[in-house]
Image (cartoon, rainbow, N blue to C red; front, side, top):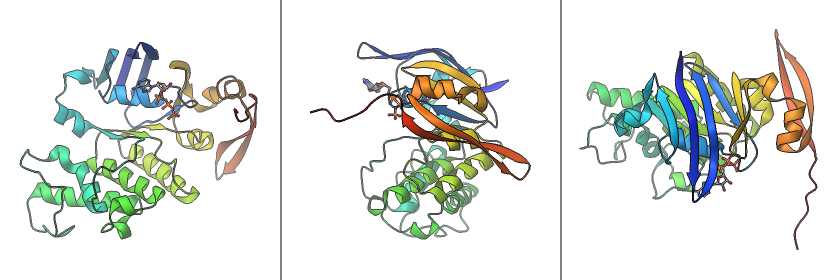
Length: 284
Ligand SMILES: Nc1ncnc2c1ncn2[C@@H]1O[C@H](COP(=O)(O)OP(=O)(O)OP(=O)(O)O)[C@@H](O)[C@H]1O
């Protein structure tokens, strides 16, 4: 049985249809990729799943419509990394990551998380505080921002901040992680590291929905893909079927070099967009 199910989902905003009658089933432990060109509707789909946009249709988790869950239950079961990387106020990296534990806190918990003592400052505290500290530290180690933990998040580089924001959602330890372009700002090593991390999280039982523009990463790491174009599902299923040369040409308007690389006993496909089918140019 699927963990996350989307049925007949449509989104209309301002008189414009952004998503058209989508059906989707994502299994527990799956690394599921959402791909498609700019404006295809990937972020809109993720926001609708997160109940951040009005939609028609049903989104359910474990058979229960998400709209029926309390905000706190939803926040514990689904973690969301948005594309928007603006920070609204100066905050240390470790306190930003600590915000990921907010869904487990009572309403009395007004601070950003760790206070002036930082990590380790509440050793010997209750079980919840220890679970929080463990989750926060693990998330920072996994995203390679441990050494940045006392820096101000708004003073980090774009890639460092992207990893800090990812650490915040990893710290939730939710059943489902929805990550909208988590590797877009990262250097190649950190892109691979994050994709390996998401893969490992799936092997440990989490379910991950990831929006990607890098088709080689999508091909190599995802179990299945949904290809969106203009709010419509063009193809869904195994990577080889979805990332066909004809889809690349018809949806992305590119001719791509598709090759295979033998890595141990596994064969991975790489996809390098090479020429544009659609002429570009600057408007005057
Ligand atoms: N609040 C909104 N009001 C009106 N139109 C919107 C709104 N949000 C998104 N759109 C439009 O919906 C379409 C899909 O947007 P969305 O952000 O889902 O695309 P995307 O596939 O995530 O694109 P990208 O790869 O550029 O991030 C776009 O044409 C966008 O302009």
